[in-house]
Image (cartoon, rainbow, N blue to C red; front, side):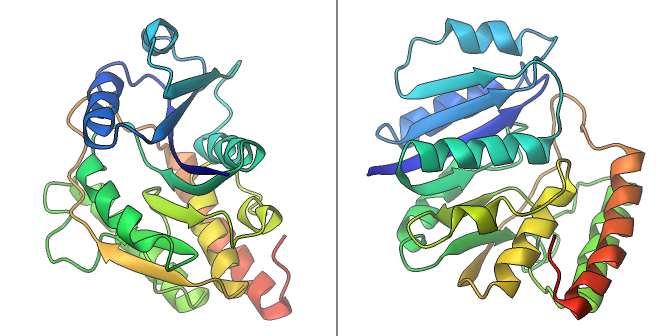
Length: 236
């Protein structure tokens, strides 16, 4: 089996993707990278196609199908190519590649290593107030209604593919941002061993956030739906 894959989804990240890939390759030259792009219109696709680094693979999807859907494709790719571990992260510069070293140290000891923005005080200090309100509201709804005290809405994680069943990892029905908390909720209910590490999460400096108002509303609705699914022990 191959050792580790780093997966990064992109959509209109031309101002960020080059920098993030260079950082990762400089710090971890032996780790493979997969980028899945949803047919960006800003030059990201052309940039990815121009790369000659054999350690960096890319998949260009025909249209924007959602970040959760991209993660499912990345997960399937990692299993199909027989990687032991999968690290997922964003391309917007908010996830620092230096943190990957901590994942590498811990990911063989746990099934999932997850980053938590709520352990460190002021880790979201430069975030807009509206995003802080949304993020904290979602966090406490997950904690109160679903019994998940983890920071379950972030994408910066590692998965031990030797121990996690693929059907459990892609069981989440959401194809948008709800995939993150939904998948972690399911993995917790399936009693996988989850460990969290604290991180600071700066707000993106280049480009704009892809999350929309309907994603926020749908996320809150789905948390309530999963509250009843949890009671009935139905996770799909």
